[in-house]
Image (tube, rainbow, N blue to C red):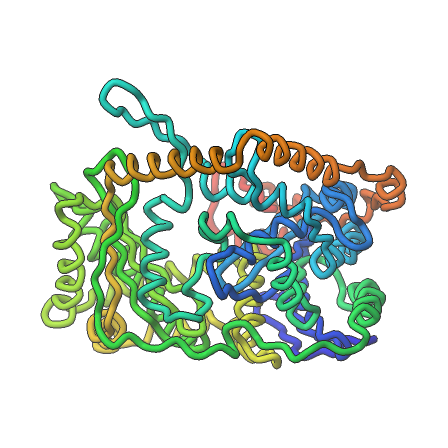
Length: 575
């Protein structure tokens, strides 16, 4: 066996976590053992963007078009259905690209695992696939492609221009949240920093993105020593190794036992510089309704492994904004003339975390004043109002209960999120993961905090700490301008291409579609075994009732019988 256990963790919740790594290929595997019928897989590649061409997200799409051993579009989803999975999925974050699968039982999961990894490490990345999925110009002279549609064509506006209607298309790139977020990233992160760029690409760049660029990005990042398989479910470590060992041997043969030196995304990049002063800027976004905008205030927070600081901030933000009785909600939402309709404050995990406070549906005339008022409220808390310690203790208890509820109802999401941060930012030894799985103890520490300690956190991270403030303003004029610019660009493109070239492009598109849509051989599907339904482990349960006593013979019933001190006139069943 090539895999060596790096860290073995027994959590207080009866869930064991084993982190191991291949000594030959560098492939990392984290197994989260739970007593569930469902097996979840998050297959994580740490990715960093160096520009706005969108390689991380375009590559995510192209991976599903086939692999070296299974070179057919859609074969992965087809086989996933035979493994008792509802297809596959993926997401691209700022610091990772994660591919997901969820199966009933472990047998189908283990059968599909090598095929999925083959798609991730050895995708076909064909010219035709890039042409149809990322960007092409169709026979009408229009820019198209799955990626183009995803980012720039999800909804339609109808704008009245004097006597006629201009029907125009806009999308994520021109949405308020996208423009505001991109603006703050440009202001807070320097050139060359991966957090600065748009992982999905910008329209102007996507039009010129080539398959060669995507292939190079894949070569740089999609390597076995930059891949982590996070698996949650009722599956033993030894059983998993039986599947991983031949997979690891094939990877070793492909890499010929050695890989060029690997630079860890973000970890081996220059640290994020602290802000020297606060910056306020504004950005316009296209919208017919110019009455409300959006306000974003961003601070740089603690380092990603400063656990107590991060948990304390999350609790403090709940105290400030979680409900109608919270300080910010009472001040700006639950008033006769509200200055916004909702408030969200979050801490984003990065090498140095970012604290984002978003205020939604702010009257445009109040955007500047609201930005000042937020800091004035913080100052008031520090200087005179203080912290309501009784309510703070309630907030701590609620946040802790919420975490416990997630651990009980969705352990995969809870622990896999910790594993992702551990793999992207933590040391290989798994120290981050070990500390993170004990994060509930920090709530006990916070319960002992004094009022002055909470005030110091508010001062340190929100008052004495420079910020980036972005005022998002709606503009109907910008909507018309963008529509007119796109119309002229397309018309000029059609004119420059000419009839013959457009016909040639249409033929090229048809050939690419035909090349991509080669039917999957029936033998490929038939040779993939369908697990027996009997192999799916179901959660065992016991039943007890308060009436009549002794109804069932099990430990739960005995406990209920001993506890029946109050006569309840109806029976309650416990499962």
